[in-house]
Amino acid sequence: MSIFKERTIELIRQALPDELQAELDLNRLVEVPPDPTLGDFAFPAFSLAKILRKAPAQIAQDIAAEIEKPVWLERVAVVGGYVNFFIEKGQRAHDVLTTIAAQKESYGSTVQDTPKTVVIDFSSPNIAKPVGVALIRTTILGHSLARIFSFRGYQVERVNHLGDWGTQCGKWIVGYRMWGDEEQLRLSPIKELFRLYVRFHKEAEVDPALEDAAREAFARLEQGDPEIYALWERFRSLSIEEFKTIYARMGITFDSYNGEAFYEDKMAAVVSMLTEKGLLQTSEGAKIVNLDDENLPPCLIQKSDGATLYATRDLAAAIYRWHTYQPTFVLYVVGAPQQLHFQQVFAVLRKAGMQWVDRYEHIPFGTIRFGDQAMSTRRGNVVFLEDVLNEASARALAIIEARNPNLAQKEQVAEQIGIGAVLFRFLVYSRMKDISFDFASALSFEGDTGPYVQYTYARAGSVLRKAAQVECNSTQLDYAGLNSAEEMTLIKELERFPDVVEAAEAAREPAGIAHYLLELCRAFNGFYHEHRVVGSNLEAERLELLRATRTVIANGLFLLGLEAPEEM
Ligand code: ARG
Image 1: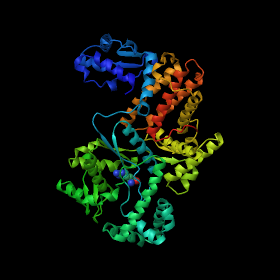
Image 2: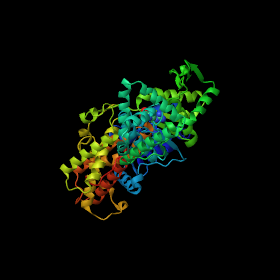
Image 3: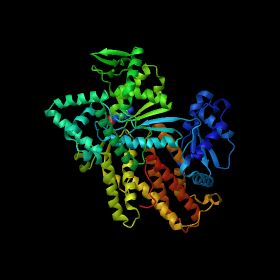
Image 4: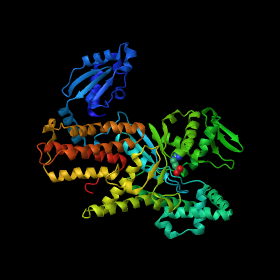
């Protein structure tokens, strides 16, 4: 929690009647008034009126009277049913800046009292049957959520639930045997497998026998035919290797690549568990779980030919994750079209008495449209993550060449800016919003973009380098001087960062952090525009303000998955 919110809550708690002290959720009740002249924090007494049988204004008076003013508090004022708190400015600047200076990259983070694990299932590409652009969004969103939960003190298990199983695998095998290009498979496996997939479907339209061949190949794979299994294994590991290279560019690693194939031998147990609990019904030869009482269509568990389905594998995965990780939460970062799928899977588990499924959440997100012609038409509906990163990086390099041609390590910085621009654009929208993406606006240095935030970070850094002054002991400075409107605005922004992170965790939504960073940068640029730093009589204090701003920008960018380049 932010420093002064925490202290204010503590003051209120002590001023409350004993019986209420433990009970009230003050973190939720205490507000920041929309108009700062009303105070820095406000406690509305209305919700206590019923319990205490007193008018809110009277309760507010009583609480205010109980408060013993600590040095950091300028004053308390009662307005109607509100107790308003005014924080002493110099103290505020001092405590916020020294806290950030001391905590550095952990400023805003939390330590949990007891160990807590969160499993985050994200990215999870279908390698056997490539799907469109949703992969980009789950990858970016899941990566950020993983960093946020980790910062909030959770043990995070990043799981890539690969789509590496199913009849489509038979299409790989048939396609490869007929039209496979060994060279391409080694160079660019994801695209080669995609090419085979597309070709298979085109050819199967005129030659339906191909479908049978594919089914037959998959059946043999399921039976463990060594030659076919080896081929499948090779396609799978080549794809994973290539994905790992792409993930590495984004700073992403996974703790597990247990995908659908991993659950192949764990599904008989699911079917027998459902049978034992009397949940399985037969319908037209298929096995289903009826979910009428949950107002959901039945969940299909086994087809009439005995084949299991996506849902069956997810049931097995859910049970496996519960036993393996004992998680506090399991988050499935998967597009909104799969809402029904997860409702059904969770409902089946609930019916089976597995109450822990209440910890499982589908984290849905909206669609993406690529505005740039180049991206949307080249391969029909499929936009490859790698192509998006390449294009963004190339464009960033061109921008650098134009703006700052002498920059050192241009390629590396271009990668940081280009990829950062994509990540930020994907995260600045709430996840349920549909995105229309185009490179030019994502990469603008002036808009609500990643490069704008990164540039603010670099700009503050260049001031610090110019000042080139020895690291001073921040605790001995006089922060009371930092009392202009712009400085107070900036200090308040810095102060609220921990609350922003907390809210992002609670909503499973990185967008709040992206918005916050834009506000913070605006507050910084507003300050920097109005006030001289180097050579002013508050130089040392203002340099501390710059350092703190940089720390918080870097921490926020990190939570979104972005790098903070020193120069750009
Ligand atoms: N491979 C799936 C797809 O691309 C996403 C998997 C999500 N995770 C899960 N446990 N179902 O649609």
